[in-house]
Length: 330
Ligand code: ADE
Ligand code: ZN
Image (cartoon, rainbow, N blue to C red; front, side, top):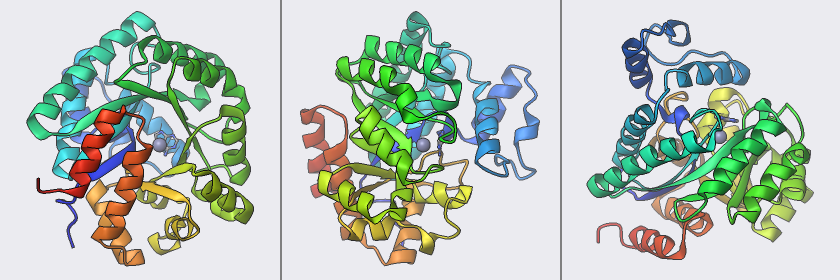
């Protein structure tokens, strides 16, 4: 069954991770860069595991060098998301890649991305909001500089701050200062945890960074007391099942804990993370979940409503999204 027409809310997508390989190849050609080593013979991205994925991600990102490159990328990504039925997206943006954490340069990148977002909203009806993301393996000092970029541009459009990258490097508490800065600027908070780290990593992100959402969080399933705590406190998980299966966090769709977490009362939402890297789209994720767990349109609408309620946008925008979820054809 196709879920393409069902309206969807996506809370966890990395802008560079959503870049189609053909788009990146085109940029490399324009700039005379040789990054052929990151592609498979069939044209897709090539990597063996998560750590090589991070290297390939950064090599692909090296072709994105100007605000104009990000404007074009944003347009391409939103057009594809809208074709998959996505009506609202929160996208991870990194000042590390957009201007090298210089606030003035970051403003220019942000301006270009927002311009593209406005254009996509007018032509495809998709709404975008930004979440600045620090990269964990770049270390706490760079995270602080990323948080300063975020704090300087916080508002109705730049709505959140988060942490991505290699969860095996450092501890959440190392990034507390950056998260405190972002919180004081009024930004809402999320952090990747419980993807490559176990339940303790999720506990530390909640305790030391005081985040209200967790990126992935799926390995909480290893600790029943933590699952109960997530359910009781209403922490929202940004679950990306296809990403987890592609990277080997879980061996198959049927083994993915998203259904068990949901049954235990945890607020789960569904996203794609880095869709072309994992050969997925949000509607493809729904199809795989329907096959694995028997979920239907009513299940997905329930999860999309949870996602809309957990979105970091203003209340007026939230009300509009909820209305579109309730009356898809209106
Ligand atoms: N950056 C892009 N995708 C990621 C993932 N799945 N985990 C951590 N950092 C990421
Ligand atoms: Zn992610």
